Length: 187
Image 1: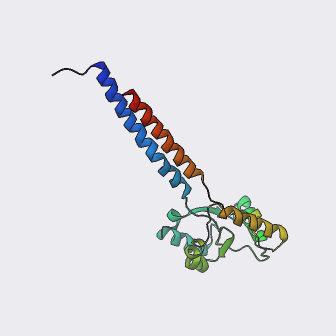
Image 2: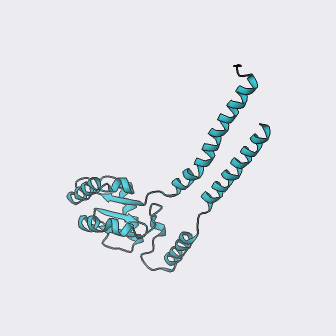
Image 3: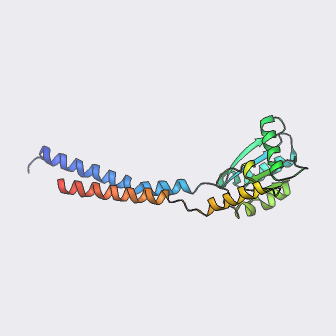
């Protein structure tokens, strides 16, 4: 039995490296698609001493809502910045009596009060994309022409398909095939 030569060891090492590269190349499209399927997003406005907010928080924790969705909690009774943001949403929705907590805002919808949130949040958020945190400037509540135009633009963006993961996947497959082809010629 002969001992392996340096050339044999290099060839074996190249094959091992090639398998690792091919595995990574094949795994990248899955990573790209996994990043595209993010959690739905919402703002949850609450008060630190509000008993209704405690009910909603307890419900969210016990039912895994915080795990299913990307919920940004904003305390409004002690934090003026959060309170300002909360009031901006009220203006965007065209509500003069806005101000009660708990309130949850997602996409261009909102729910106020513990019972409506507990009973309806998951049903309501299931019906909208909610891929981004809501923005008071993009919500149409007052019916003005500018808000209707913003809503139309937002609907057009939602209709457009994101081809980036497909392009990335195709480039990875082509690159991986080229690597295999080049390394087979060397062997």
